[in-house]
Length: 77
Image (cartoon, rainbow, N blue to C red; front, side, top):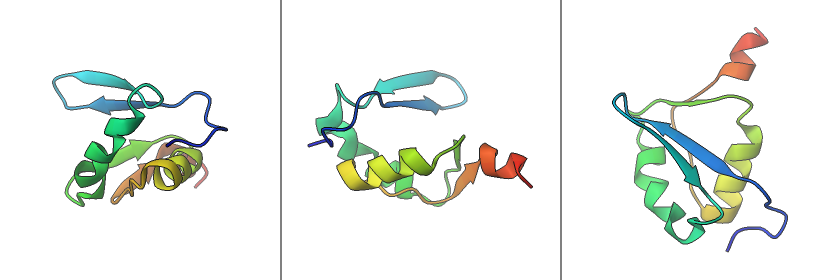
């Protein structure tokens, strides 16, 4: 179950051919399906200000991201 403090959470995926916007609240029971993709080191995950997203994905869905690029952090360099 997602945290009761969770109000708005969307995940955007781009496959190169298509873009997907996933409503994490509506699909919370299916979020574990993301585990293999998010843990795959051959797939780059690009986030902007991803600390909160990483936190709720780990805490609420036990989804752990590997191979992350955060554009907000990169802009600070």
